[in-house]
Image (cartoon, rainbow, N blue to C red; front, side):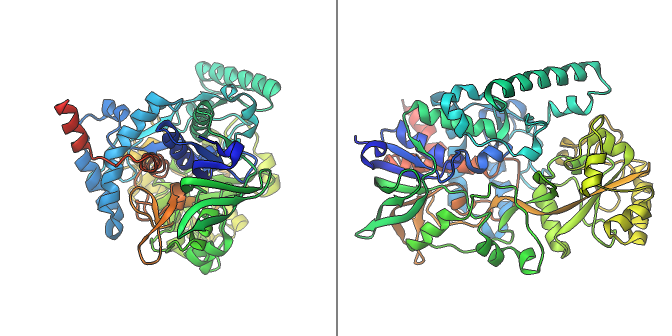
Length: 572
């Protein structure tokens, strides 16, 4: 077959290079189709390369080793409870049936590999929730395997690296950095990591041993390149091309201007609309109320796929109660946006509003804390701790001992007060309200109790806390001055609202009819999670699963349920 990189014709054209798009491309190519991927940026990997690299896949073979009692039925009950009125039975069934098979297929057929995690579901006490077994993590990767294409891999988000060095999302090796000044074993581990990383930077200009979403993006890209799938960077999609009511290709610009024709279909995989300012203003309640929003998602995620789909007649509705996966962030002078992924869970941290009052359980998921910030009416909060806590765990972008605090105090990112009242005045918080909040919190915290929000009582609350802190790994008093605070504001990890599709990803128009030749995956497709965030990896898990389903559909392979697969295997 003539390839698009040569004759501007292919079977499948994928617009976007995150996990959903690359999973679709690999699947379609492996099933006999010619595929081209285009990406408007100079780097590939999309938001995936910034992410934690975790996939939520109930029933996966890795998870069964940690939780053999988990069942598909329990996962379905959990999703029904989590999505409520937005439960999509057909799509959820397809996801639960295909997810484990997708994972096995990628590990067998490609360079994509995963390792188990101990992540609980985010709401493990909800009907069908579990304490472990549904989330997997992309295995670390040596990006030298990308060769010259290493320079085209999106680097990780700088604010969550240490001197450009990545940590595992599972939190395992971060503990060594926290304990480096207390444990000879941890000190030796940290020195070894730093020396190896410095050598990589000298030789390659960046760290090459990557983890998390950077490893997933690199593994997917390596798999594409192994198959000969061109990833054309700096090649934005300008317009969809239609003939006789069918989408037949895309006009592109940038370094490869012209038209690419796609015989089977065009797949929109542009990552949603996290930086589409106009659409955000229409759908984010806190922006409508005059609040701010600062997303750590790559700035190029501007809703291109949704815009292209709408131009072709596609249906987009902002219908979910939470249109995006919320992430509390802080703005770091000269650095960018820091997502508060770990610090909130540590004992000795509390979050308060401008009135000095706590408003939520700080050890719930980023999405839940973000939703509580929105519901508060302020869409911002202050994360507060004492001196002992900040030196042990850090606070926001401020690192723990032995790293100094003065730099971030000088920039104003970090606020300080000798007393709680002085800290409150430095932050513009009501002093009396904060003093009363801390006093009440400390009475229970000294005994490991959070009487207001029951923090630390679920497996998820405890997972990212400090297991060495007793009796409650998530709760400790705020009592040893001086005291510190960082202002958290609203951000997101990506959007939930997207184009309406069939289960295989065919884009629907306003009348509910299929637009022939047009597909959507990843965050360009409306999430099956109904605006909720049930567990670690609920974006990447469905993105790769439905990418696999869409790729197979484009190749003419129908979706099968597990029961049909089981019966066929028994018959053979």
